[in-house]
Length: 353
Image (cartoon, rainbow, N blue to C red; front, side, top):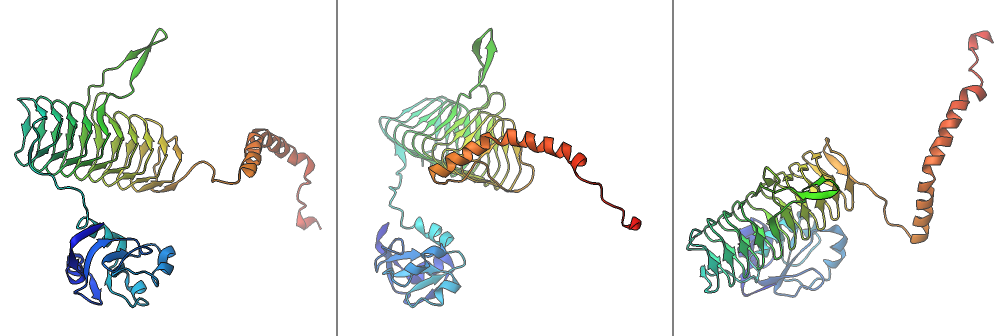
């Protein structure tokens, strides 16, 4: 991404509190990966497997650690964590259009709703009764904000985000297109062979600095609120069921599915495609690897996995066949263990010899 005006390396070093090695007057107009960066672009080395690209890069400067900078002759900004430094600088070069305060003429806003004068309300937005839109909030085109919703200051909703009634969120929340927050949870009771719907009377409570990915869905609570803690990061196409609670600073990758009333602790990382059954507790500081099925509570911090790793199809078929034989094999082993006393001679007392 590029900034046509450019910024000097010395200015970037000051912004990052980085040590500058090289020409501080060098103008940087964008960011790029090592292999395709040009002379007016800044790159970074965060993964050791790409270190071989450092010698041949055409980048105007590179974000490096002290160790990697020792063998690099070009311009460098030396930092403790190049990837974190890149993350911070990325906002300077972000081409995303800046919202302009005001209400588009096609927006429909209930008389009892409150919209701060600094908010930006896009085309076709609908804001229902008693909703409150805070300072510097951006609502993209065709967003729907249900009755009694609260959107905290500095939040940004991309076009076509849907908030059902009674969704309350903190400050600086980011929600990507297609996300649905506060939809009715999957609650039914059996009545003579038919399903009786249960009214979902709770809401959704979202903390500060939360990000919710495209087409992710967060159901409202059945009785109490579904709760998303501060600084939680949710990727695209995630399903959060009713009454789930997610602790502060937890992150989930795409296609995770969390069943109802599950409670997830703080500082957890849930990789892509993980599934969790309902009514379980996950403690703080847990990492769950991709495609794992979590069927019971996790009470000790650490890394957890399930399933089998990829292998050639022919080998997998053999393994699957052996897995089907495990129960019979276990029974045979148990039978053999029972026979061991009869066929194994008793140890001889050395005092008798």
